[in-house]
Image (cartoon, rainbow, N blue to C red):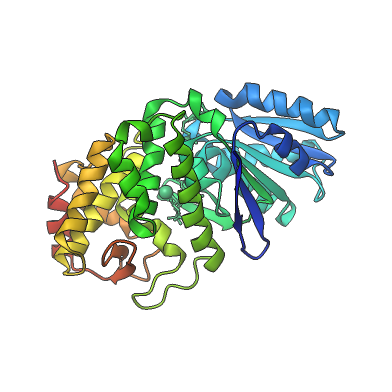
Length: 362
Ligand SMILES: NC(=O)c1ccc[n+]([C@@H]2O[C@H](COP(=O)([O-])OP(=O)(O)OC[C@H]3O[C@@H](n4cnc5c(N)ncnc54)[C@H](O)[C@@H]3O)[C@@H](O)[C@H]2O)c1
Ligand SMILES: O=C(O)C(=O)C[C@@H](O)[C@H](O)[C@H](O)COP(=O)(O)O
Ligand SMILES: [Zn+2]
């Protein structure tokens, strides 16, 4: 069965979730003269196959292979993509297809947002994390030496495809990493997600299990609702929270990723970040013990990390200063005041941050 979740942002678009969606991808690209398929090596076969299907419908494919994972999200790779588009004579009626995991679609999205100040984009996600999060919401970007996703743009795709068949080749560590964002959606908006995972953690890691399709659909619905209300992350005021809600666990998570030179997966780092911020909210008197403790419990059950190096706090604090939620020298964290009750905690003291970090230090 195929499901559609609509994102009703400035330019509405569908997120299609199902099996065997290649015909639909071809249909979404039809009408363009050329399509640049930006993909990592692991998706080279799928990219070639899509290219041939497009050629048969009169679309000239341009295959652009980029480095794997986070190594794609650099200014140098972005510039290489611009060179490839320039040499191919890529115009505003042509279209970029991001085919891969979140790192690939983040890069491809930014290529589409920046080439000729914006060309059409279709995202075809091949990882769980991309399906439930990265491919869906129009946030695109790359990293710099100073931190994660520091350069980018909001650029909505025309359509998003989550072909669940792709998950069967995904390493379990990457499935697990994707589950961190699923768990995030459970805490910030849809607690039924947590119940489903807790009921059968092994099934949540089996891409053929029906519960995975249900988790994808529910998580996409959470993301779509938040993005539809605040595409440009512009509506958090005071302690109220708009799109920043989706950044739950990411303030510390991104700092860990950078400190690890991106050898930790995104979801692994966000997992630690969520345990940390739950502790922060508890100590700030904003979150009850049971909900705070549930973070570590559910993440442990699916095998995600919940602790990080004891001596890293000063380093991580310095990196968090460049988080996009920071205003001036005031750090801001997305916290929970209960299940599905997000809020902003602004300017916690260094003592409070340090003592909360002690709860994840190992
Ligand atoms: N834009 C957003 O809103 C948003 C949201 C969440 C995460 N992200 C970003 O997404 C990235 C993480 O995404 P990810 O976990 O998909 O990482 P990824 O793109 O690095 O993919 C993970 C690994 O899976 C491999 N892979 C991809 N598809 C495969 C398949 N079908 N079979 C086998 N292997 C496959 C990749 O080659 C890679 O090694 C991070 O850069 C993160 O910052 C962006
Ligand atoms: O879509 C969003 O908004 C998110 O924050 C989703 C996050 O899961 C994602 O990792 C995003 O890339 C983080 O964005 P950033 O603005 O903190 O770089
Ligand atoms: Zn994320």
